[in-house]
Amino acid sequence: MKQTVTTKKEAWLNAVRLRTLPLALASIFAGSILAYEQGVFRWPILLLASLTTIFLQILSNLSNDYGDTIHGADHADREGPVRSVQSGLISLVEMKWGMYLFGILSLLSGLALLYLAVQNLLLFGVFLGLGLAAIWAAVSYTSGSSPYGYVGLGDISVFVFFGLLAVLGTYFLHSLDYYSPALWIAVALGLFSTAVLNINNIRDIHSDLKAGKRSIPVRIGRVAAVRYNWFLILGGNLALIVYCLVTGNLGGLLAFLSFPLMLKVALGVQRAPDSKSTDPYLKQMALSTLLWVILLGIGLLIF
Image 1 (cartoon, rainbow, N blue to C red):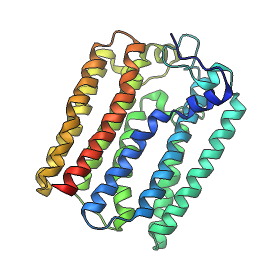
Image 2: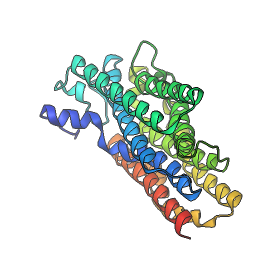
Image 3: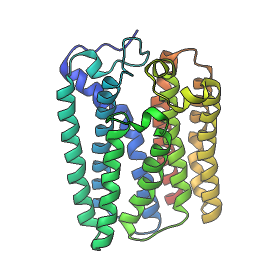
Image 4: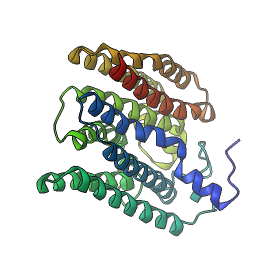
C-alpha cells in the first residue's frame, strides 16, 4: 500500500523529504574532512555550507513535488510514495510559496557563506554565479517549461552539483586553494549521489514512461539501468582507491567498511520485483554514502 498522508503538517514533512538530507550533507562533510586533513578547516564554513545545502535540497524536493504534478508524472497510477500536492493537502500555490521561501533562504545563506569565506570580488562573483546555478538546477529539474529531468539530464546535474561542485567548492571555501587529489573524492560522491537518483528513477520507471518523463532508466530499460547502478557504486569506490594511492594516505580505505552495505543496495535493486520493493534502497544508499564519508574522515584523520 502507498504511504498515507492525512494532515497538512504530514504533507509538508513528506514534501521536505528528510531522508534526502544525509546525502546532501555527505558532500559538504567530505570537502570539509579534506580541508581538516590539509589544515585549512574552518567551522563557520562547514556550518554555513551545510545550512545552504539543506535549504537547496529542500528547495529541490519541493520543486520536484510541484513540477511532477504540473507535468503529469504524479498521476493516479504512480507507484512510488504519495506526493504532497498529489494528496490534495497542499495546493500548487502553497507549494510554490514554499519554493520561494527556500529559494530565498538558500540565497541568503549562500551570500553569508561567501561573505565569510571570500574577500576577492572576482571570486565572490564566480561563486555567486555557481550558487545561482545551483538554485536554478534545484528548481528546473522538474519545474518550468522545459524541465531537464524529463529529458534524462538529471544524472549529469547530480554528478556535477552533488559531487564536483559540492566537494571541491566546499574545500575551496575553507582553503581558498585547489587540492587536486580532492577531485577523486568529488567523483566518488558524484557517482554515489547519481546512484541514489538512478534508484529513484528505476523505482518510477513505469509511471515515468506513462508520463513521458525520459529518465535514464526509461531510455535504456531496467536491465541496463541496473548495470548502470552497479557501475556508479563500484566506480565511486574505485575513485577512493585512486585517491588513497595518489595521496599515500591509505587510512581512507577505512571507508570500504561501508562497501558491503552498498553491495546489498545494488543486489537489492537488481532483485526487487516492483516499485515498493525498490523504494527502501533509496534511503539505504543515501545513508551508506554518509557512512562512507564518516569512515573516510576517521581513516584520514586518525590513521
